[in-house]
Image (cartoon, rainbow, N blue to C red):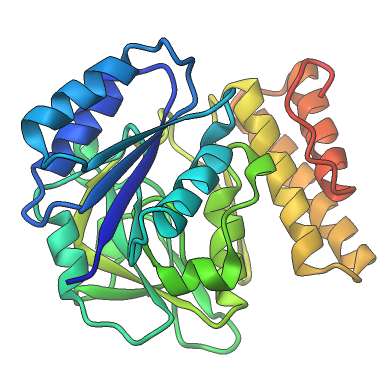
Length: 319
């Protein structure tokens, strides 16, 4: 049997992290190891409460608590967790979760039941139980068409029939095999948050990997607090998430612009046009949602500037 290690980062919310740990213990096929990456301080209550809970619910030695020197964000923490799982624990697979993403009892068993070719990553379907199990975020699916290879499913009703859905890839809920780590390493830690979900799948697709979302492997995760603003232009889609805190908006835009450098390192004009288009659509979405403020515009332009020039600077009031 393959060795499975579930990983997730902890920062601040002990209740969410303990709930995630309980859900992992309730799996019909329990993971062989659980790695919690503590981005909080070493005296955070989780450092005592998680081992105590694990001792009640999981076999001895299952839980591994990694203490980070500072808050490295989800990308930085998971980079450490993935490296630890494959290098130190010799895991065959790493199942990526978050402290507020909670698998249903059969989620891991259902993932493993699907037979896939080599260099294929299986992913859980991420849904929001508070919204009648609707998709927490649009799922980008493969169409098999040359001119429009991708299509966004905005709701459960948009999904094709069948249990296995060819997808563009993602981070949350993905069951990454060891060969993926050997081919692409770990997510870039400096992305901090809201970047690993696009960067890591992109690296794997270019290494010859494909992705399959398993419909009956369900992972609960809250969706955006407010409805997304969605623009479609031909084969391209743009999503704006209203109500994001300034720091999260900064990282989302900065990381997106930085990723364009990876995709088109020598096509400066194409990248410039894409970034300008992104700015225009963001401003239109801000107008529609009454979020057009000086601070919002400053954050948008500063984040785009830093990402465009490859500067993964952390968020600050001066960015």
